[in-house]
Structures are given as C-alpha cells and as structure tokens.
Amino acid sequence: MSRDISMRAEYAFWLLPVLAYFVFGENLALLSQIAITALFVLSLDLILGYAGIISLGHAAFFGLGAYAAGLLAKYGWGDPLLGLAAGALVAATAGFASSFLVLRGSDLTRLMVTLGVSLMLFEAANKLTDFTGGVDGLQGVEMQPLLGLFSFDLYSKTAYWYSLAVLFLLFWLARRLVRSPFGLSLRGIKQNVTRMPALGTPVHRRLVAIYSIGAAYAGVAGALLTQTTQFVSLDVMAFSRSAELLLILVLGGSGNLYGALIGTIVFMAAHHFLADINPQYWQFWLGAALVLVVLFARDGIMGMLRRLVTRGAQ
Amino acid sequence: MPPVLETRKLSKRFGGFIACNDVSLNIQPGARHALIGPNGAGKTTLINLLSGFLEPGAGEVFLRGENVTRLAQHRRVKRGLVRTFQINQLFAEMTVLESVVLSTCERLGLGWRWWQPVENHVHAVSEATELLSSLHLLDVAQEKVRSLPYGKRRLIEIALALASKPQILLLDEPAAGVPASESRELFERIARLPRDVTILLIEHDMDLVFRFAERITVMVGGALLAEDVPEVIANDRRVKEVYLGEAHDA
Ligand SMILES: Nc1ncnc2c1ncn2[C@@H]1O[C@H](COP(=O)(O)OP(=O)(O)O)[C@@H](O)[C@H]1O
Ligand SMILES: [Mg+2]
Image 1 (cartoon, rainbow over the protein chains, first blue to last red):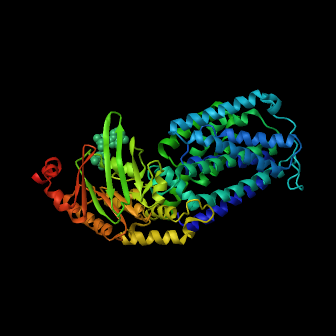
Image 2 (image 1 turned 30 degrees about the vertical axis):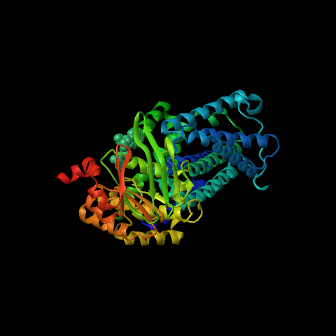
Image 3 (image 1 turned 90 degrees about the vertical axis):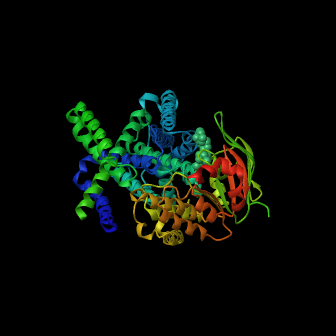
C-alpha cells in the first residue's frame, strides 16, 4: 500500500468515531464499550501481534486495572485520570512481575502460565469479597467529573469522548512505538528469536518491557470500563474475556494496529446485531468466521482489506 | 601476542554424546583462521560455545583475556564477537533493508529508542545502505527476505553479521549452498574486511580454505587433531587419513 493512500485511510478511519457520535447517538454506551474493547485488543496486539508472546490470561491485567480504579474511586479518589494512572501502574507492575514466569518457556508454557495466573487472580477476586465484592461486583464507585469539568452523564456522552480520547492517545503512542527501532526489534524477536541475540539484542529485557507495556494498556482499558460503568463485575477477569480478546485480534488481523481496531468494531457490531436474534446463531457464525480466517486469511480482516487495496491500485 | 579468543579445555555433551571434547584453542588478533573437519566433528558446536549460543559443560572461553564463559550471547556481540549461522537465521517477513537496519540499530545502541520512526535514525539507515551496496544487494533492498533466492539470502545472513561491525567474526560455512560464482564474490567481500578484524572460518571447500586461511585447525570427533599453517596441514599424515584423504581421493 502506498504511503499516501494509507495516510488518507488513517485520517478517514478516525473520522468514523466522530460520525458515529452523531449517527448512533442513542448508543453511546455501546460505542464506549467498543472503544474500551479496542484498547484492550490493542494491548494484546502489542505483545502477541508484534512480539509474538501468546497469552490466554490477558484479562488478568484488564481486571487489575478495573479493580484498581474502582477501589480508588470507592474510597474517595474518584478523579478519572488518577484512576487511569493507577490502573496502568498496578497492571504494569503485575505484568513486569509475571513476565519472568511467562517469558521463560515455549508457546505452550506461555499459554498455560498466563492462563494459570489469570485463573488464580480470578479466584482471589472471587474470594476477597470484603475487598472486591466477589460475585456481586464492586459497588459504590463514585466518579468525579473528568478534569473537574465533565461529569459522567446518563447518556454516556462524557464516557464516549473520554474513552475515545484515551484510545486515540494510546493508539498514537503505540503507533510510534511499533515503527521505532524498539518496535522493529520486537518484530525481529517474533520472526527469529534465535538470531536476535547474535545481533546484540537483549531479547529477554525487550520482551519484559513490551509485556509490561501491554499489561499497562490492558490496565487502562479495565480502568476505563470501571469508570464509564461505575461498577466492577467479577467477569472483568474471566477466562472468557481473555479468549474473546484473542479471537477478536485474530479476526481483525494481529501484528497490525488497525487490525485490532477493525476487528473490535466488526466483532462488537456483529455481536450487537446478531446476538439478540439468536444466541446460538451468533456462536455458530462466530465459530465459522474464526475457522475460515485461520485457514484462509491468516492476517485477518486487515490483511484482506490490504490485499483488496493493493489489487485495486494495480 | 596474547590471543584475542581462547578456549581452555572446553567440553560439551549432548546426552551421552561428546560433541566437543577438551578443546583448547587460541585465535590470534587479525587471524585468518580456518576450522575444518568432517561432518559431525563438532565445528558448529564449538562456534555455539564461543558465541554463547550454548553453555559448555566444562572449560572456559576468554575474549581478549576476559573470562566470558557465562556471559550472555548479546553481551559478547557488544564486545565485538559476532557469528553467522550454518543454517540461515533471517527475518523472513522483513525487507532486506529492514533486517539490516535492525542490525545496525542494535550496533549503534538504538534498540531501545521507541519515539522516532526507524527511518529517522539516518545513521543506522545509511550504514545499512552502504553495507548492502558493498554486497551488491541494493537492488533487492526493498524485497521481502523470503522472496529471494537462496544465494541472496545467504548473503543477507553474512550482511546481518557484518552490520554488527565485528572485531572477531565466526563464519559457519558461509558459502554452503551458494553457486560457485557467487561464493567467490562472497569470499572477496570477506577478504576485504580490515586486517584488524579477526576471522574464524568453517568451510568445506578446500580450495577456498587454502586460499583464505593462514592457519588451519583440524577437528575430528569433537577433539582438535592438528593445528598449523596450511602447507604443514596439507602434508600432515593424520589429517590426510581422517579428512583430506577422502576429499582428495576423488
Ligand atoms: N543440540 C544438539 N543436540 C544433540 N546433538 C547435537 C546437537 N548439536 C549438535 N549435535 C551433535 O553433535 C555432533 C557435532 O555436530 P556439529 O557441531 O554440528 O558438527 P559439524 O558442524 O562439525 O558438522 C553431531 O553428531 C550432532 O548430531
Ligand atoms: Mg556444522
């Protein structure tokens, strides 16, 4: 794809959420959820799509961010940006600490360790009812107005613009990161981990860094969900969330930041429109789409789009 | 002169099999040193131990007098010890330029930079471009590595190592599988490296070895059999028996 076309496509893409605000003004709560999920998928894309670290427990970081922001707000520190910072910090710390377990082994080890850690955290959140509210969820999350100016309203207007702004900012940072020498070295590690040390790359430390960054991104997404819904449900840490995340990324196309966003939009929209009609129907077509993508279009929706554009340009 | 690279009684076992047995080797600064021996002799294993790709079961490795036996591979690279692989280890989905820039960025200590895009690090890019030009690879700079024929990919294997500006270069059969015409060019490029770059070369083509090397070590069954200047090695009876004999009978 030529640089020019992709630049224009990017500008056009970011006009969509602004348009959506006017077209789907009734559905701002859903649109906020899409933005938050997109940020969450982006966080997995950074570690899996770029660095090749497979995870089945990424919801652990989402959940930690969600609880961190929720508890802060419940006990009187309801400033949204403070909550985001706390969510990022808690999740990044957990990511950093667990990276030493996760990064040692093979892909299978990584799958099992990430899954195991997230199951343990889920159970801990379930049992620490005094702290988390357990299955009843964390109540009493009181958010202060964003920047002291915009309170969270019933129509989710603030929630939407806030989620979108955070997504945009973190997307932009991620975009810088993946195009930098650091990002190039991550792609190198993913493509040939044997070669990288022979070029002088401290592979383990690079992976620890991106794993912590990915965790921080997930923590921010979790904190956003808490703040925009003023509630933390136990399922922020559920295994199904990690699995769904992986599925959205594969559908959208991993190793491509827009793949993460487009995958989320398609998935959430399809879910919204189809799931009401018939839940089984939804699961069936979701399964079918997943199998087709993995067998015939490994690079997902984004890869297909790109091939279309390339063909069109010729 | 003290050796720039030295091993003392280096050993490596794979299960019950001894791939490297009590190897004590000295490489002089600026050497053009060849390591020869039949298949399975343990040459690649020795390179793996020297570079830190494998940890030895016993013995030590010294780099300019410093004991680096337990030093991580990437730290040895930072000290100028760089190797290539007998079996290509490339970045299939990158362009040729990208993969060499990856290497020059690492050499220039830019690997942690995350703010500016790669192409803004002009020093890394220009160094990579010059290297590609000297290897006659500029015309494929924008091609994906995986789309290139084997001979070209073999050159990129070498280019990645040269981009690290090695002071000691370990070449594991660099010309393996490369057509004769291209391998000559490859060796000319290697021979043009500055004299202060120390080179240890594993190579099966005896013509190339005798043309290039000023010192030859012969390895058999995991152990060193002989080491000397090429003329002496060529006439060594034991060497002829175990190694050159079969090759030169033909
Ligand atoms: N990672 C390994 N695991 C088990 N055996 C190995 C391994 N690497 C090498 N070997 C064995 O060690 C011996 C020496 O191999 P190698 O060093 O590759 O020889 P050369 O490079 O001289 O042909 C061979 O018999 C090979 O099968
Ligand atoms: Mg070998």
